[in-house]
Amino acid sequence: MNDDRDNPMNHPPEQPTGSDGAPKFGRLLLILGGAVLVIVAVTFISEALYS
Image 1 (cartoon, rainbow, N blue to C red):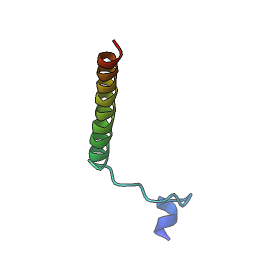
Image 2 (cartoon, rainbow, N blue to C red):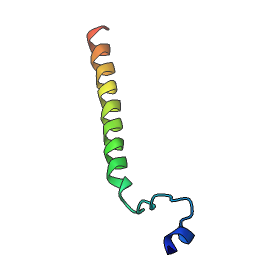
Image 3 (tube, rainbow, N blue to C red):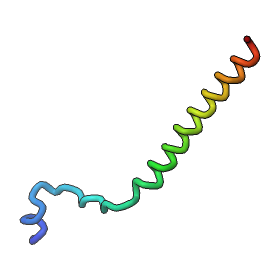
């Protein structure tokens, strides 16, 4: 019954915080950087072919 006073609205337990988001953020940053590099490469190649 002690749980009712500590958690009267029956909220789920909080997720542990830490560096769990860091690898996902790093992976996202690598994907975005790769996409920028592909766009730059396509731009230079098309400029070389069509000019």
